[in-house]
Length: 279
Image (cartoon, rainbow, N blue to C red):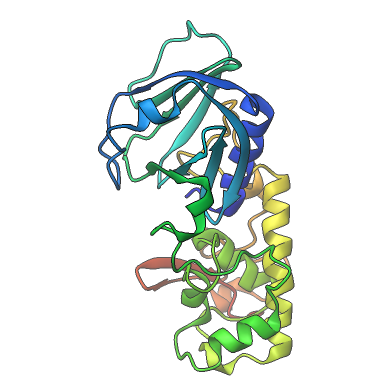
């Protein structure tokens, strides 16, 4: 967390709040994240204008008018707070604070698993963070044919493959479980066993689940909040994720016999699915 829908929600909120804003100053209170924030970060971006805000995979990218871009990953617990009032008190885990002509952006990350760095805008796709990144789920070239070519020789479970950012970027644990449920595909199916038709259903399911999650402002389970402090509500639409023992929305089975939604562990991550519907 956050996954693609949450990052997309944060990105859109930032666009509405600070696009075309001048960064007047930056305060870095803690540099120790997954990668240390560069020592010259404040100097590079002070007195620059934010000209574009976009998403790549689970990263928010802020392009500025000096030819450099901020690369921002929110980790497991990262939150973005937008403060219109410059006198608003900072919080304990507000580690990076951007003072702009339109308000304050504070990056709050209690666990500091996130990342904030920069590169030349012209070199963004050659940055080491993006060297082996797979296709975006909303890319026009993301298709059953693409997945078939990537997965046809793999014996790994399809759920594990969906979390591999070298194959598809942006999909995390929540939306992999939900998309496989939507496509009625078991998460334990080995990749090579999936037909092109099944992969076509899966592509459609991935896009539908992600689109619905974006419309709902993402899923708030623990730390995630939108920049205005409000929560997402897609968690209220989850069909299987974190619903162990419950009946899934489209099932008529007797959960006293089936046990309802099943939770298993795959590659260190929790997977939730319906054994009755997902084959």
